[in-house]
Amino acid sequence: MGFPPSSWGASSLDGDIEFMKEVGVGAADFTVLQTVDRDAGCYEAGIDSACTRGIDYWDESNTTSPNFTEYLATVKKCRDGIGRPIIWWQTPLGVPSNTPGGTPNHYRDNRVHYFLTHPNELVDVGGVGVVFGAGWGTQTNIATDGGQFKTLSTAYLANPAPLR
Image (cartoon, rainbow, N blue to C red; front, side, top):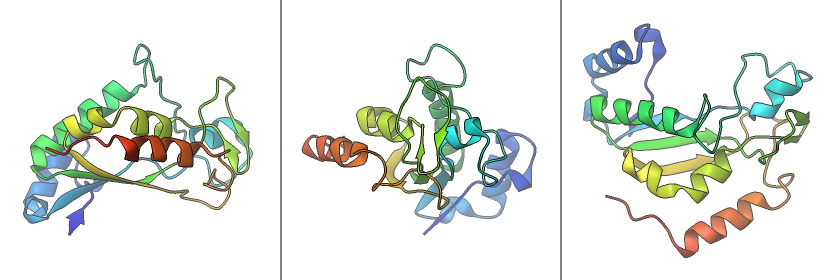
């Protein structure tokens, strides 16, 4: 059993961690982190009413913000603070692109690409699993991603990251 950190408990990550500890999530088997429930390109395109929060496309080179190194540092802080391994869910299936946006069922995002090509980084911050899937009907899915998930997951499964 696992619980997700909740920003309802406080206005900072440290406060969220303390709130989650107060409600007993440290007794769970794992912590659940929602990666993000929509492709970044959906927010960039501005054509889908389901994409209004403003999610950013992360820099895979980790030189400009926002990027994966920053995100994973936050995850590690959460993992260390709560003390439970991490499972990500609702990791969007968009495909990397230098062109912002996209169209329904074909938005850009690079989380699948990064997670499946840098799995040791996820394990290093306490990760034990990732659940991939579209969080909304108009998002990129395994039938519209041009084979990205199949290719990357096959490569990962041929050489999986050892869990610690």
